[in-house]
Image (cartoon, rainbow, N blue to C red; front, side):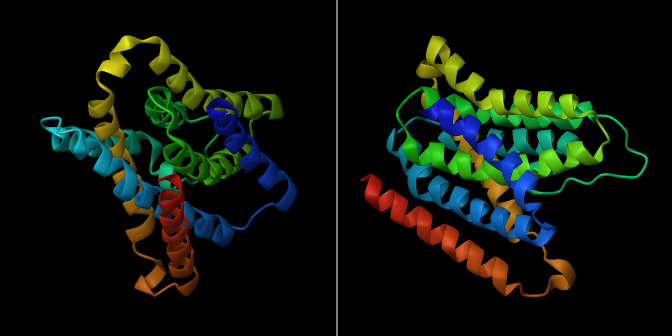
Length: 228
């Protein structure tokens, strides 16, 4: 179930581009919704989980996650929250960008293998759909061959399931579940707040983005209530 959902999230992103060819504004609204949902699940579900464990120095691991995501974004140029651009002179695949996105997806999958966590799963799925849309459009604009585009999309789709499978097989991930979850919380906090609180164009209030954020908060809140 978890692996299928993770794979389908990337496939859905590609299919949405092929069928609807979404405009930039539509993608940004979807990103705002996903960022709000991701932040809400982190605050309402993941943070209470790690602090209720009474594990020492949990806050340090959250800070490590924030730093880790900052390093990854140095190479991905903010693709995790929608900042991915193609320049006229760009040809072929930017390997650093793809590797950083792949590592980010891999880390996301690790906590899913240690317990049945449907709320976290759906937060990741909702986040991956717009990222898959953005990555697919970027690869198309990079003038790669179609088989290369789909090969790299497939690799990206497999990274989160790979993290999930390895976390089930390797005892280390179970023994340090709380610490790893703390790091993932830091990653999610960095990404979601970047999506939500970056300045809009000319610092103008964007009512559509605001509504998308409110809907994301509401859906996440209802999800947590039904999960209990």
